[in-house]
Amino acid sequence: MSIKKQFLKSKPVCKVTFKLSKEEANGAGKVNLVGDFNGWNESADELKPLKDGSFSASVELETGRDYQFRYLANGTSWINDPEADGFTGSGMGDSENAVIKL
Image 1 (cartoon, rainbow, N blue to C red):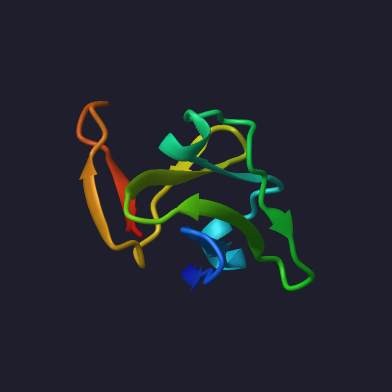
Image 2: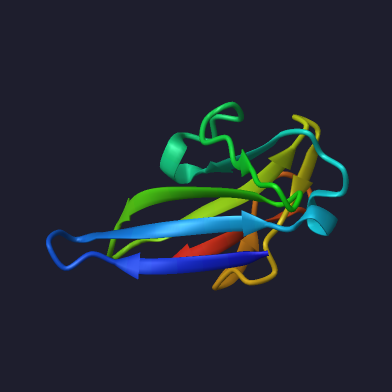
């Protein structure tokens, strides 16, 4: 997994690229990026499958904020990104959400 941040000089926005490796996707045919920035919509922000079997998506997020997110594989399995800036309780049992700080 990897998270790449590209801060834009022209506006208070950061282009964030999320990437999930083939191994981390664990055979998933579809992966979505789900977080507070898209209202936790499980069908929004689908990651694009790459030739090497990994998945990637880029989103522009307002700077000066923290965002919670997780990956959803095949609509059933939640995956956290170990390269996130931190983790916080999700309010759903003992699960945690990844946090990205911009």
